[in-house]
Every structure is written in structure tokens, then in C-alpha cells.
Image 1 (tube, helix red, strand yellow):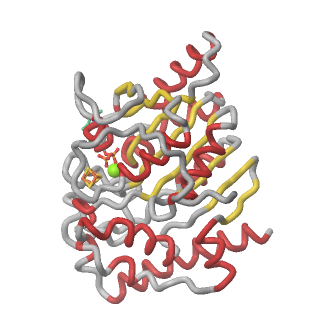
Image 2: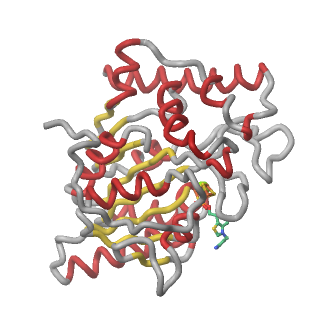
Length: 299
Ligand SMILES: Cc1ncc(C[n+]2csc(CCOP(=O)(O)OP(=O)(O)O)c2C)c(N)n1
Ligand code: SF4
Ligand SMILES: [Mg+2]
């Protein structure tokens, strides 16, 4: 039976009450990922909103072990834990490094690259809320073109974000996936698949953030869906080097019913000063990536 939100496992690994802002997407995908792991995982987490979400010892909002690592060393710490568990024959446990975009694409990138090159047996998940949110919304290497942050306050960021899945693909790892909290079954299925593969696996999650993107907390899922419907975020997998579109992105490629980027950015205050030209530049960037992804899927 295909996975849908009604037949997800019922066991919960999150407790009620955590320190995230109202409407934060972290709780949505962490809940799905822990269900996919059946709670049999050790999480390694650097400084980020996710650390705050989990709480400070001795209180916690989660039922799985969390190791807090130094900011640049998440993948190195996870590799060491994976090697130690392997030595002890604990093949039942998955090591999941989970970092923000700053902790993945900027500050954590050398440790991640080293671990991927060594083939460390771990799942690295980047939840991408597109800025350094925990410290007050500073620009990161993943902040999109035109988005205002506290360090790009006037006209917004003038560079497009890095392509992290492409960077990981260049390491030749066996599994890479992108996923969104707006499409929970797709996210859950990819986490299950990643769990069952050996070596370094990478997932990149779109992570809407009401506090930093400046939208109403009730609209997180709507915005997550809109990111995919406009092609600003593309759902895909790269398995043993073979790229394919998945879920909603695949059906959009088949129907040609992708929405204009304006519908995704207008509800967000961070794009509040975007001019017609800025919107056109962003649309062009989205179109180029979309067309490349559709061509790759068809190859
Ligand atoms: C080496 C180091 N530099 C800076 C910080 C301060 N710091 C803590 S959390 C954070 C932001 C993290 O951003 P990101 O990884 O995107 O996660 P998010 O907060 O957005 O969830 C920063 C800069 C730190 N703890 N350690
Ligand atoms: S700042 Fe954003 S990512 Fe961080 S807890 Fe608040 S809503 Fe979540
Ligand atoms: Mg971030």
C-alpha cells in the first residue's frame, strides 16, 4: 500500500511541548523522520534551532538520544559514533546527523565533505530554513536571491544559494534526496529508503520558518507546498547516480502546471521589497533549475 498520512506508524518519538516558535516546520519533519527510523537512531546536532527544539539536559522534548556537536564538526562526530556502533555490532541503530543550512552548507561543509569521501555510514540531513535563524536571521550560503536578512537588510541577498545536493552528488554517495514537510508521505518514504542504505546518505529538507521568512505561523504547510508548486524547491532523488523527480514535482513536470514564483514569495515579508525586476530574476533562476531537473529526469 502506498504511504499516506493515515497509514504512517502510530508510535511517536516527540513529546508534547518544545521550544520552537509556533508554526515551525522542524516538528513536522522530525516527527516523520523518527517514525521512519522507528526510534532506533542516534541524532547528532550542532548549534541551531533544532538544538533548542530538543531542549537542554536534563529536560528534553524528544525520546531519542541526541548528541550535541560543535558547529563545524557534526559529520565528523557522526562518523565516529557510526564507527563505534559498527564495532559493537549495533546495526539496529541509524546515525542521523541533522544540521541547519548554516551548519551544513557553510560552517559544517568540510567535515561533511570528508565524511562523504570516506563513505561514513550515516544519514546527514540538512534542514534548510535558508538563514542562520537561531541567532537572529543572518544570511547563509543557502539564503535565496532577493531575500532580506539582518545581514542583507536593504535590497536582500544578491547571490543565489549553493546547490547542496549537487555538491554531495560530486562525492559519489549512494543516496541523495530532497523533501518537504508539505509532502509528508514522500518525506517519510525517502527517510525509510535512506535508513536501509549503507554508506553516506544525504537528505535536503525545505524548512519554512515563520519567524525568519516573516509570514503567518498558520501558513507553514501552505508555503511548503507552494515552494514545490512553483519549482522554488524541487522534490527529487539521486540513487546510485540516477536522478529522478518524485511526488508532486514529477506530476508538475507531467502536467506543466507549475505556478509563478510570485505566489510563493509575496506572502513572505523577507521578499517584501522585491521589485518587478527582482521577481523576474528569481523566476529566471527557478526556471533554469527546473528545466535542468526535468531534462535530467527524462535522460
Ligand atoms: C563555531 C560557532 N559559530 C557560531 C555559533 C553561533 N551560532 C549558534 S546557532 C547559529 C545559527 C545556525 O544556523 P543554521 O545552521 O542555519 O541553523 P538554524 O539556526 O537556522 O536552525 C550560530 C551562528 C556557534 N554556536 N558556534
Ligand atoms: S526561528 Fe524559525 S526555524 Fe527557528 S524555531 Fe523559530 S520558526 Fe523554527
Ligand atoms: Mg538555518
